[in-house]
Image 1 (cartoon, helix red, strand yellow):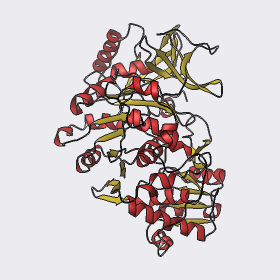
Image 2: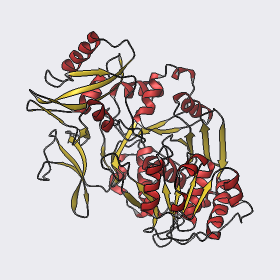
Image 3: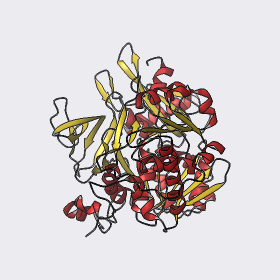
Length: 513
């Protein structure tokens, strides 16, 4: 039985083994290259990439086109002295140039360094220095703003990029990387400390991601898949790009300032059958007021990055007839918990993180790293090299073995001796019909030590009466002590560049950063 054949979670848990993953690839542990497995081996199989742009136009590229163009790019890099182990920074929005640069770099055995396009010049320069990149692929605006002496060559998309690859051979012998060789240096967001860390990801990262793509996202060969998350970040790079292409699914992405109407246009126009996005995207679709104007063919849905509020979950489930499936983890450890959208018999518990990824040992522990009983709060951990690795989230395991997140370990609020979950307050607020989105942080209080302050985006006129209504609503749902003692109405909840709630910014707004 192959990895694509399992019908139920129980069957996969009993029979799955990692050798079955190698069976879908050409390569093996001693000779394995992401570019070949994602692009070259699928030549002749039709469309690989669909792009939707902010101005409404679309572009499509076949596996054949991406294979030829990435080979030309690899030859062009080789001609300027780039080879195995060299670093190439790619700072572009989703575009044919982004994907050609990524896979062309990997064909040489060089390391790709994705970089988010909204970074300030100092953020880009830090990554260039830290990674010792020799080449930067970017747009003219960024090229004008940074110190070009930091790299050997800056290549600007447009005529310069086109001329760089023009006339180069359309095939290349892919460098024989091993599965354990570095493919990508993925920088953390840097939101919790001054300098981000470079996390190495290996060619085998696609191999290890395949079970998640098949069992969690439900990807299959020939499927039409769409993920609007930026490929500069782990979610968009691995589960928006590399894993689906390796399986043989076509991918879709979005270029430009976020617009939920354009996303829905893309889902309809591209006849997408499998959709994965951050919860914010689903909320924006729900709140757009025009979702009924589009006809969708989506049969599978997934999300990651932050909790999915119950109001949006129920709306999306009812609209599409599909329960969105979560997958949860971090840049450092990858995906460790999930709801398994690839299995016919899986029932999603709204709000739950699901169960451990097959082969992963995940638990909830106390401050002495001892596993806690069911329905008891502790810190979520995963076993790495015989030791517990902390994810820095508070969670519980219910009687059925499903994990639930209660918020970041540094966002749990201790107020007058009570332990309060900011995540539970946020989720409860989001079910009120006046609330579009909510975020909760702790702020100092002279009497109680800390109290919960909620920042709330609403669809009606803010007022003191509405604030009191929301407070009473949470009291009724959770408890008389577990409610936001302060409510501040905002036009929009601030987000990080990765699309998550920017709690650092909220604390700055509250004067407690």
